[in-house]
Length: 393
Image (cartoon, rainbow, N blue to C red; front, side, top):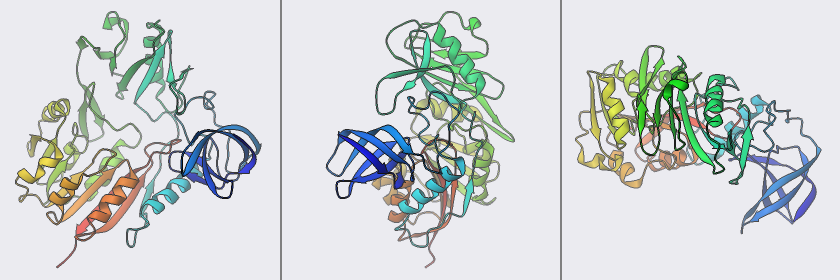
């Protein structure tokens, strides 16, 4: 069904403009912003809302801008690209306040912004017929591109050369991560020749083999960490140091820190330089090996799921640092940590589950500080850091 001359009245999490039709039924339309007057066609209808495709903009909003990426209309990667960056921040702040509306006394204490472009030093591309690109918005359609403005130029250059080696008609994934020296790891299923043909790609993983190095050192000012082919890493090269410094600012010199979901040690090394001791807990085997590679004297490492924390002696630790997946903290973890630590430093890429977890902890903890760090400009993604302190009495 097509609707014409409808005003966009809000922006939702996920990067959608919001319209109301037929007496108040909600429709989500990508690449729109409040104030736009548009035509759209519904392609997915649910009981409470629908998703639609933008057909035409009759009257552009004053908040709209011309995004410099020529692939924006087809590629689904930059959901907020059409919105002025300052207003992107305002939208995200509004979304955060809505997620945390049930948390008593909630306020955003600080906002850390980022350069808009060339910030990503890792990305997963799709390859097909000698070209690279991404999948279209809410589709499996391959969208070939020649540049990605939010990725480092050298990352794009490397992936372009790799794509040229793959002439297959099947869509294939290719993950790349590059440090500031230009050294990179590549994880893909396509067949490549000799690594010597690809300058600065120091390690390659395919289905059947690994060539070259299996780890990459990421230097971040006064600390470093390692990444592998399958381990998680933050993506914004401009904010890595500041991100870690904010987390460390919540740690005191006499603190003993238990770190859940430690990953490959992005926070671990920096925290250990300040804290008395760190116990890092992680369930990914590759990440564990990378953590051990740091070889920091006051860090102990346990290979375990976070849910097993109830079996671990946590009494020596007064501070908890958590950076869970998007799903947040499971109920067993919440039950195990509640009222056991003097303070909790909570890092999250999902404000919805973070707000839920902080509410679950609110009987025993007060939210003292909340910071929004914009690690993903031009997208709807939100990174947060919160400090919780145990209630007195």
